[in-house]
Length: 264
Ligand SMILES: NC(=O)c1ccc[n+]([C@@H]2O[C@H](COP(=O)([O-])OP(=O)(O)OC[C@H]3O[C@@H](n4cnc5c(N)ncnc54)[C@H](OP(=O)(O)O)[C@@H]3O)[C@@H](O)[C@H]2O)c1
Image 1 (cartoon, rainbow, N blue to C red):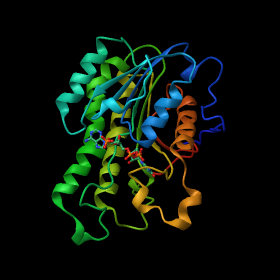
Image 2 (cartoon, helix red, strand yellow):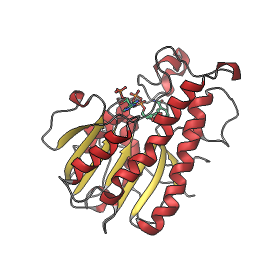
Image 3 (tube, helix red, strand yellow):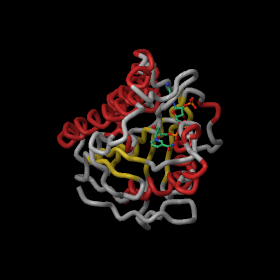
Image 4 (cartoon, rainbow, N blue to C red):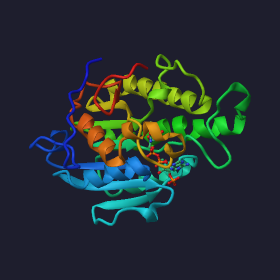
């Protein structure tokens, strides 16, 4: 797997080439999740030349940016019917999606911190983590697959995490999150094999966004580590730059926000 030479600009928007994002004069996007990184990605996409329609899938869609190109659509990652309903409604509004990006994820929830050791594993929490961090992705792709199958370049990108890399795991801990992200990675890689044949123009990639200020990361960022933490805007700029460099045929890969390959 080769590195992507992504250069994030300081302007807050990815430096797309003049031909437009993904080399398209016009493109439509679906962003799943309006947390810190998802919202920053959507905000930056609004500055990309050629953006047609943007659909934001969220369980509290009322918190979405006001822009006539953005349509919020209700989705709860744990309610499969909400995902199919969203795709059906979006399919009535546009014929093609060029970027489908999944930014939904969960590391901790009320009363549950990531496990430090084996005895902390709680089966319900493990299942919840899998539902949100792993199972949601293939359900999303099932629902939106037909809108991604067309003759133009397209990208399916899903925010994974370096801690989901099996090879990189030398520290342990965080059982549910690590295992669910590793499962997401395998689901995505397997899908990339299938879509090489059925969706030839779609690049399928897992992305590690860096360590980023957000509700998800806040409890785990110590004072000494703060300097190395990205703002959601910095991460979004870098991730969009990585995405903008993808071309059909470059698929089934896992990159970090700097465009460096992450071992599976
Ligand atoms: N921040 C980091 O340092 C970091 C590092 C590595 C990977 N990541 C990954 O990056 C992605 C984005 O994380 P973030 O930092 O932006 O965190 P965040 O601000 O907490 O965003 C997470 C998003 O997931 C949504 N979500 C959770 N459960 C959901 C459900 N059942 N249905 C629908 N939406 C649901 C949340 O929606 P609500 O607002 O409705 O709860 C929120 O929009 C995640 O996949 C995370 O694992 C983050």
